[in-house]
Image 1 (cartoon, rainbow, N blue to C red):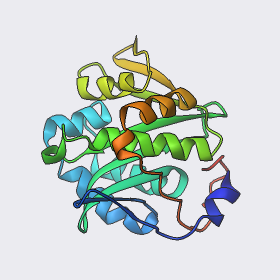
Image 2: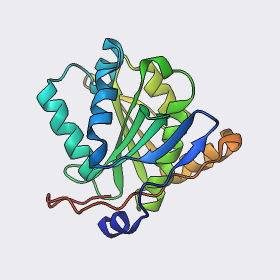
Image 3: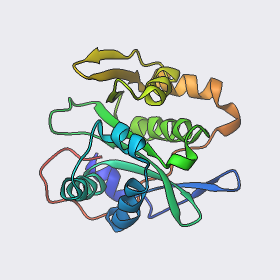
Image 4: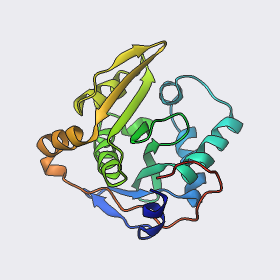
Length: 201
């Protein structure tokens, strides 16, 4: 999958309506990603990380994500308002990816999560990922509802809810439910190979 990652064109964009554009994020987007996370309201920040985290931890997380994961950003003009991530490697089994989403507090409940999950499903399909894992806190009802919309069955695991989306089934559901928003996932930009020896997308 690393070869696919490196051979994609650089920074293509496409419009979603008149206001929102999606593109893949790369390490140069670290500051925009960090500003987006810091701008979340307290409850939304807590839901995103299932609790509170330090700035040091967050900086390391953002650096690792932008170097190792598929990360798609939604922009209003130059402002990053939502992010979808798909992580592989480590303890995640081959053919699976773990998803994470954050939507600016003022943009919640406007369909951005749905648009980003559809884009993430297409990116997963292009990178030989057949299952997307969604893990979220039990209190994050919006995330659980979004996962269910694409076929996940959420189950409790400790203090979290865990669901698995079959990518092929999710894409079929997306095609039926979102025919009026049938946008492809943007190609992944060219990037330097990360130095960590882990499976990358």
